[in-house]
Length: 227
Image (cartoon, rainbow, N blue to C red; front, side, top):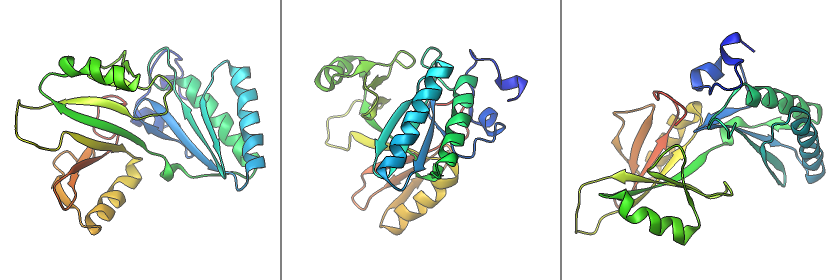
């Protein structure tokens, strides 16, 4: 690990993490995401048990999902709100464990879905959505609501002008690894979609379906932090 990324209190961005050569992992928002194809449930269980032992040893604990036939892992340092050297070390150890069990990394398969809601006053409607969904206001971003369990999509509020006419209010934001983004955009266009804007690509592409409903494909590239 380089001296630049060894400070456990410093959050690391995409370019810094690229220098760590974590081939099995991708930065999506404020966490490292990894997926390991185990082939069967028993191997997945052994991998999870190994991850648990390493997490206890390092006193740094990931979010782990065990399903057939894969294990999905998310690493972040909640105390500083992003990825640090602690996550890099744990990621390396998990990759070694997965390799020893014959589990194959599939980093291109990871993604994170968010819901964007257009509003001219997010403070007016934020309490409703927090209450009805059981969400919490993000500590880092005043215009976001997060699922306390970390399993459901973040909702963020996009500023728009006041309007009365019916229009799409919710849209989907899909965060993907940078090497996947253009293929995903091409697939959406081939499936009948249209490109609304690529002015901010590769940070994000705005797409629409045949009826004009919008969605965005996004990456960490071109951002000042892992947001």
